[in-house]
Length: 382
Image 1 (tube, rainbow, N blue to C red):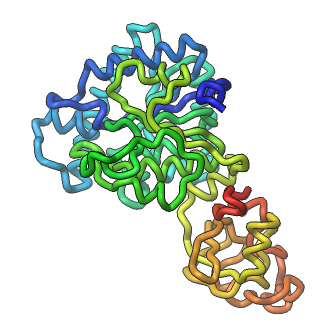
Image 2 (image 1 turned 90 degrees about the vertical axis):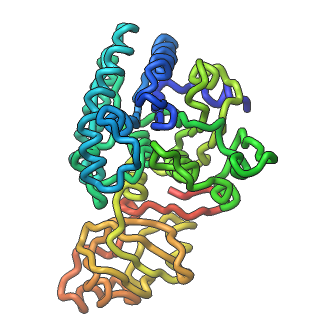
Image 3 (image 1 turned 180 degrees about the vertical axis):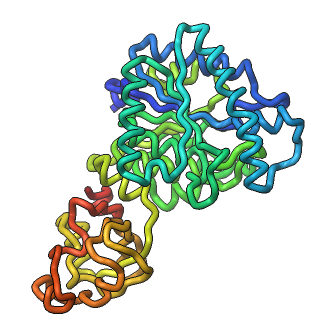
């Protein structure tokens, strides 16, 4: 199947653009932003809806304040974002206004989407903005985010938002041509990888961690984001962001950048939220029988399959399931606390009430609240 055929039904596109694309020696590169906005406006003319995840606030704030050195402390980054975010939105608003398009701003922290109710509220807001034809511009709320509620970088943020808005395609615009088989800055023999059918350990090893002086995430971050996005059934493309008309090239089916294909089987929105949005509060070690039941048969996790409990968590908390070798294979919302599971692990469900004095559930984690992330036959299971 050609790229054009693979992207034929794409109507909702999430475009992520990094600081290395948007910024120049004089802060925000206004010519590049005008070019990007024109490209997005052309997508709208093709009948596509667009959500934009944009970096650039901190870099813009640094330039406005005349700061040339790298910011080290969180308060410094938050202050720079406070100065730069308004200017970034003004530049976008003016640029999109020339094409008769309105913009809306959404600033998020991790805690906004780990809470299921707030997650759904954000989802409803995004869908309304899309219905109104507004170009939604999303960024991390850097002015209030601290380590425990940060996404890490906008690659990860974009992966989360793609699930929220149910995107049909994610395009990550960056400062390189795409993913190479080795670091092109270190080897002239580096070759661009145009297509990734499966994100193997070799593919992950090819991605470097180096970020630019104005960016947070390197190529490794982008490949990790691709892994999350494709797990929810969405194709993901890493492409050169400073090339004129790059979005049109992609939608015309040209082999621009690197295309990551989703597997045939993928996680639904809720299980994606469990697997990749919620932060695990502990680990449950399970035996081979339980591993097969989870991965091969799509069943719930019973207390009989649990061999060890790690951490201190409460009912409803997200917990990672690992096999005997310590490999993470799933994440789910537990029905019992860590102390309760320690008392009933290895036992049949019929003995739960005898041991605890009550039995609210037969399962430690019900399959409806369990997202399996391990591979079965080369495909992530649902």
